Amino acid sequence: MAKRRDIEREVLGTIGELSAAQLPTAELFRELHALLLDPLGFDSGCWHGTDPVTGFPTSTVAEGLDPAQFDQAVQLELKGEDTTTFSAIRAAGRRVQTIHRATDGRPERSIRYRELLHPSGYGDELRINFDLGGGCWGSAAFMRDHGRGRYEPAGVRLAERVAAPIAAALRRAHLATLRRTGSACPAEPVHAPAAVILDAQGRLRSADAGARELIRRMAEPVARTCGLPTGFLTVARQAARTAGTTDVRVCTPDGQWLTLHAAPLDGGAGEVAVIASPASPLQRLPLAILAHGLSPREQQVALHAVRGTSTKDIAALLHLTVATVQQHVTAVLEKTGVRNRRELVALLTADHLPALGLPPI
Image (cartoon, rainbow, N blue to C red; front, top):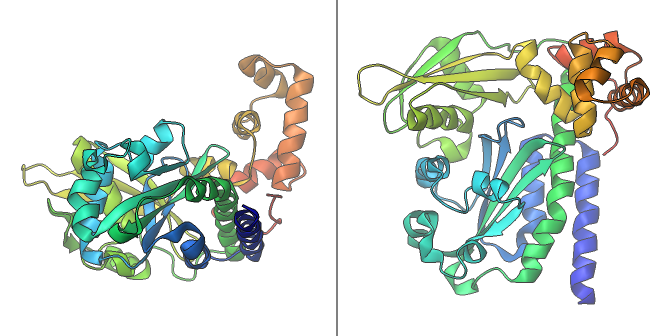
C-alpha cells in the first residue's frame, strides 16, 4: 500500500514539473506517456489534443498503435454507439473509464472492443478525459494486451488522481503556446481560406495549394495513412455522420488558431468539403476565457464584460448584487493579468495572447 502511495506521489510530482516546463502539447504527451507506462501498466496508447469547447479531437500522439486503424477508430468514436467513447464517459459524469468496468465485465458488449480492440490483441482499455474548468483540454486511451488481464481498481484510481493535474498542464501548455508567439503573426500564416475535399472513406480527394501546405505543417505520423491531420478527419467525419455542417477549432504548431468548417457535398457520393480559415475573435473568445482558469461564474462575468455590459446590467442578468459582480470582475482581472476592462477585451479577442504571464494552476 505504501509503495502505491509513493508511486502516486512521484507521478503527481513529475506531472507538476512537466506543467511548469510549459512544453508544447505533443512533447508533453510523449513525456506523460513514458511517465505513466509502468504505473498504469499498458502496452499501447494514444493522446489527443481537443477543441476545448466541443471536446472534438484535433491532434494525436500515439505509441505502439497501427496507423492503418486510425480512421476506423475515428468512425467508432463519432458514431456514439458505445459506452466508452470519450463523449459517453463525459456524459456519464466520469473522467476515467475502462472497457471491463463500463460493460460489467462483459467487454463483448462494446462495439469498440469487438471491432477494434479484440482483433488487435487487446483485452482491456482505460480512457481518460482531461476536463477542467469547463474546458475539454485533451483525452487519452491506454490499451492492455490480452495476457495482462483487465485494469485493477488501483490503476483506475491512479488514472483518476492524475486526470485533473494533466488537464491543468494541458491548459497551461495551451496558454504557453500562445504566449511564445506573442502579439506577432505566425512566421507562416495560413493562406485562407484553404479547402480540401474528402471522399466517403475519409481519404483526401483534392486540396488547393493553401490546404496542402497546411496539411504538411500539421502532419501527424498516426494519420499518414489517410493523409490528413486529426482535426480535418474528425470534423469531416462528424459532418458526414450528421449530414450537416460542423465546426472545430484547431491550433497549428506555431500557435495560430484556425476554424475548420465541414459540410457534405451534394451528389450522394458521401464527399465532404472542409474549409480552413483563421479563427475570428468571436470564435476565439470562449477558448481564451476557458484557458485562463476562470470559475464558471467568472466566465459568465468575463463574457458580459467583453460584450461591454455594465456592472449593474451584469448583476441584473446573473441575479447577483453589484458588489458581487465587482468582486468577480476583480478576480477576472487578477487571473488574466490585466488592469481594466479595456485590456481584458484586448487580451481575450487578440489574435495571439500577449506575454502577460500565466495564471496560477
